[in-house]
Length: 632
Image: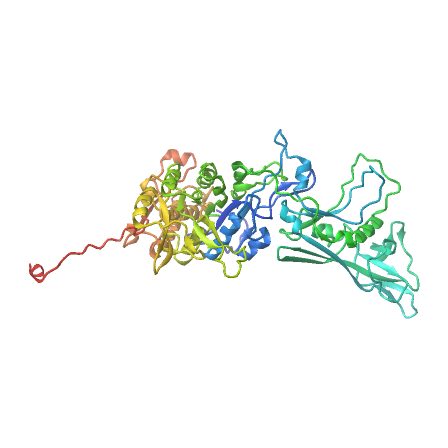
């Protein structure tokens, strides 16, 4: 109990109710795969690196901004982009995307520096330096794509300068009084002319605003500069416009000096950029500490003025035309990715491993697994991820061009209560191709996972996780690739292969809700996901109980919390039974714990739940009923 040492009146707050348990999200999808462009964790060099977790995407428009549109990727069709589009079209709302990219490696497995650098598109800043034959040009600043890939070559840079009003304030006699509307580390252009200068500023006319004592003064590398009677100064601010694939990012009021809070190297830097999804960064040459000091090297203010002129040079404008490649060929292991190094902040997780620490994810899919055909390794990695995380279910795609026999053979290789397989592929009208007049619309065949995961989310939002995500209309498709008839499904369904079927007058629908488990207790997707939801919610909401005194008071509190939580879901129809006692039980007392458990700090709560199973087979038994039979 609290200490009471001084005589006084003590008012304390207490609680007379059980702690509530809030249900976790169940409709959030996580996907790993190829994209045209976009965030990925990588180490650029010893000092520059990006650790970018998979971003949260809440619409397909956001996906396009972060990862590009539906255009082809290195290995052909952009399956992940189409899956994201289908997910949102079918009711999905939250998506995390982990981009997979394989940097070229040397024979010993290390990333090859030269080939690594070539993966990033760039555009040198400033005019080409003059030099004789065989001369090695000095390193130049460059606009560099922030993310690797050939799509970076389509990024266009435009830099302009804006001049403000004269910032020199004078008294009534024309003598210099102070500088106005500027702050330290602003660059200004000085001029003795009354007209505002135009065009790129001459570096010799550029000065830096610094605080000297209590005053702001104009300075160059030799110190403060005297302001003559006719001297005017105009604030110089950059505007950078970055365009790519219909996206246009505008960065205004940027400065050049690195100590300025709006320095271009900060707003558009590699690390800690103002925009986590920025397309480019300004790469400056890193001096070699072993090189001798050049006595003729420009000072910091002159260097900033030169950089300003170089950024405005015509040769610095345009597309990132140097470099930009899609890396090495992808292997199955690249989709699993690498784990983050807890001892090295410069190494972030990639692939499926990048989704590990995102607690919201409840569904995982990997549409690019179909690139490996009937090879089960990629699908095995996805299922292994879901099983290891415990609170996720994997939606599995069949190999392309699978017949009934092929998909049965493929399914026979798996046994997991954390995965579900859907068959067949679907066909859509290809939105990336403009058809010729009078010709049939171009079509594209896609794996079903993007559509199915959207239906998972839609069913969860409209009904609840306890409702089987089946007998739901598939939106946005032209047709189902293979006609799965009643008789064909009678072969697929007992083996846990969920069919997509066309019902005339009722549209294309998901017509199956089984997992890939051979355990009849976990036969149905909704039962598995209901228990995932209950387990995750209880675990997350009862962390307060750790290290509390392990006695009857704690047991009662936990029991009441869990019972209240289950009662709500029984009332909503998630649990079977006409009364709460038939739907669930919660025991947390001496009957669930021995003295040995208590001595070893264990609190054991036993929870039993009666889930509702889907009415998979609706049977009406009809027979003749006569008047004579009624009298008997």
